[in-house]
Image (tube, rainbow over all chains, first blue to last red; front, side, top):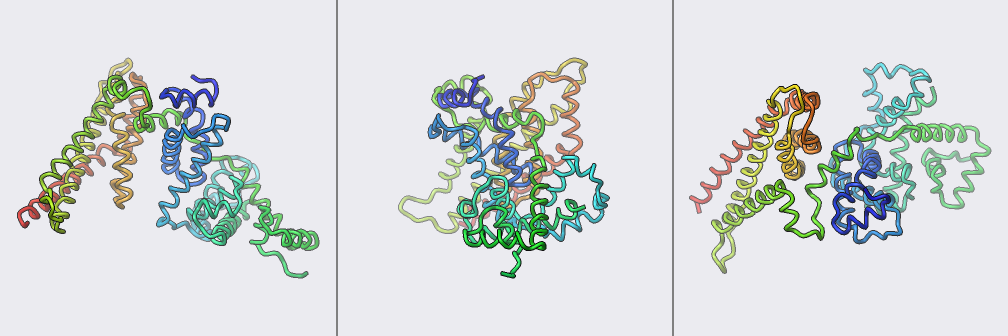
Length: 188
Length: 262
């Protein structure tokens, strides 16, 4: 197995599929994490992983060996996630944050959890996952790009094909919903 | 200045996206307004809570599954196209299937070809579309049949005490994965949610089989069997397969009627 990404890329460019497999082994989890954040479901995340590596493979010739392969792949993954989200604009049916309360309604987790329970990362993960599940695909993408990826609103508007104001309002709505869903637990 | 900062102002401030003069105003206001400071602290706490949530991780063994899905669809590089065939009978069979499909489409095109120099009438165009639909349905039907066979063989594989050789099923599953993905995406894009859902479940199992070692322990085989049985996958594949056959029959009738009518 090639020691570094740079040597794996060089070998993969020459048709060495084992070298490309090494890159998949090293980076597919990170791509999955990003894709899951962006898309919100495992199936889409898996599709994004596949598209990302397929695109990367096709564009290996354009990759500059001085660059960081992980960073380059990350950018491709963001674009693949956006392509998928834009392709599914018709599914813009995220729930309103008020609905989240209803979703939680019959659940015993609605009862104020103890601080110990909240400390459990899986509990936090579930709460945040649920809150993000209340965002529309566009709100989610805009929020992830702004909050986790550190992109500016200007960059997000270009990436998502929105007007700057629309991108800004997607983020506002996303944050509002996140606050509505999470504040009761954070403040308790 | 007495105006409080709105929630949206606070979001812009949090992300450092306020224009310069507004940013200075916000800073000044926050320093002297307890209500806005409290609201901003709440926002910060929620954001910190979001940051503290670990990202969703892929299942163990995801790398292997990712490669199993990816490898059959990677374009080949400079090693020479002949080597690609010679070293992989599975790919040869898959390619042969595609060639046959293209051949069938070509023959269908010839059969319904518009005479030279004459523009196709709407009826002729419709006829060609129907023939294409038939070919696609036939191909999908065959794909489902082949998938069923792999599942049946695994479910009914011998109950030996030692390891079980599933290299044949593995090789066939590998061929089926890429085609299955295309059919699933087609079903999604045409709004056939039920077909897409069954194909998705099928794909996950096929990928697992393709990514398995060629020899598996009895326990591992039992896990695959349970997965097939617990989701009633075999039954679902049979149902959609029979629906595809019905659609094939209907398509044949429509094509025949069109041909007779023209």
